[in-house]
Image (tube, rainbow over all chains, first blue to last red; front, top):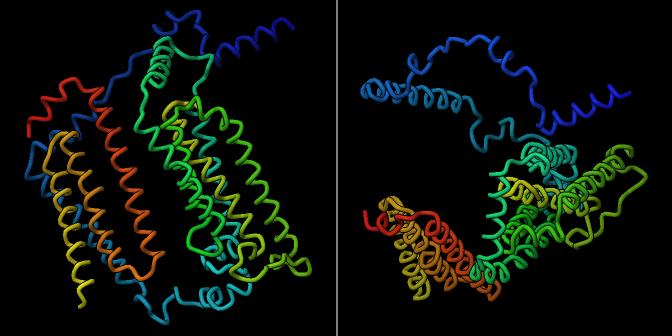
Length: 301
Length: 103
């Protein structure tokens, strides 16, 4: 039991980075130094650049080869507007002719990405969530495992943030941030009626959050938006999305027999699942945008 | 062409000329402080003249109100962003004034 505990403690200290190798000297001396192969001498950009005619000739040759390959590909593409081309087929025709009737969305793009191809959009939202979680794992500041220099840097940052008044930025953000966030909400909610939708509206909301955070500091942002809020909102949205689309999946993708009311096309409460799905996607995108900004600047949300 | 269209065209051309100057300035100057001066010119005066031309061409009151909002947004956000960049440069670079002189 005691050995087990000591193993646990050793593991814990190893993860926290406190483990010191006992036989460090022996360990280092037994390792042989490898002969470094100097690739730099063999393929050196510096040497190539100093040989300027060869450098120029190579540059032009590589560019010409790339242009030739691209142009060769363009020849094989179907002509724009060609009625026999592969892009003009029954899929696009069906979207345009029966899109409003089948999805209830006036914005065909919203009808396409959130109804006909909703699983694709679900995957995209998951990619965003996984990206922010991966960045969180890599960049979040470990409170137990910081060096003195980093601590001092953080303290200096905080002093600078609190003492520097940033009057112009604060006043500007006070006028702009609410308007920007409101506009983002409008774009998300009107996704099925006008150009826009979850992705674009969510990034506008994220920009508003970033503006607020830059003006008022991370401390004030943390009073209502922490890492817990971020993960909870993202996971809740993805689960809602998953639930909605599972319903469609189990009812045979056409809601046969268990119809979701489509409403009149053009009204704000219409087009079945598209409005809630837009809200879910918008919230995930907003959280991802702000999460990236906070993690890359300060290392915590 | 009516008088309104001519006035609008003149305004848009003035705006594009300002944009041209600002782009030339961004490539011409070597230092951040000189460059943001040129870049901010396009974001304020250039946008103002281009949108003013479109405002004169505007059909109904809602279009015009949107154009006014665009000008308002740019005039609020762009100078503040420029100010913040200049402030950071001023705080972090000690020989800032000398760098500004070399053209």
